[in-house]
Amino acid sequence: MSVSKQGAVAAALAVIRGIAGTGSGHKTNLEGRAYGRLILPIDPEESIARPYVCLPLDQEGETVEYAGMGFTSKWIVTGYAFFDDNIASDKLDSSGAVAANDFRDDVIASFMRDQYLGGQVLDVEAVSFDTAAASDGDPTTWLIFRVQFTQFGGADDLLA
Image (cartoon, rainbow, N blue to C red; front, side):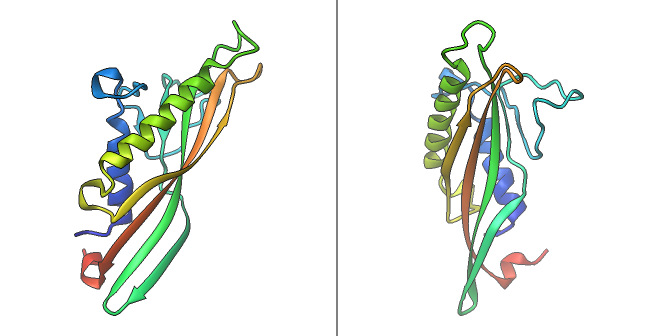
């Protein structure tokens, strides 16, 4: 088994890209729009249709524990999902927050179906979700979520 950090994040992105609407058993249809770098919807040079997801490899707080000739590594990556909201037509209710909640369900279910990311990890879990509904200045609902990865391997698993 490879214990490549990049391979684990790429496998997680592939799982997220598979969130493709009701025909695939999901509520959200990303149409494959999941990216390995952060692209903010307020960037005037970017015009990516929403919803879309960013899962950049900006690790947080990795811990490595050694046991004999093996090691266990755990780290967290922060993901971002962006949804259109109905702020212009309804200032009292957020369709974007509803869409973000649906996506949350889809992420949890998708990772539960492939907890090993095809053998890349011992475990992957979406461990937290924070939603910020749209405002008059930004008609986009933001969902910030954290994905925790756990890998196990030995020195030979890290060789090129």
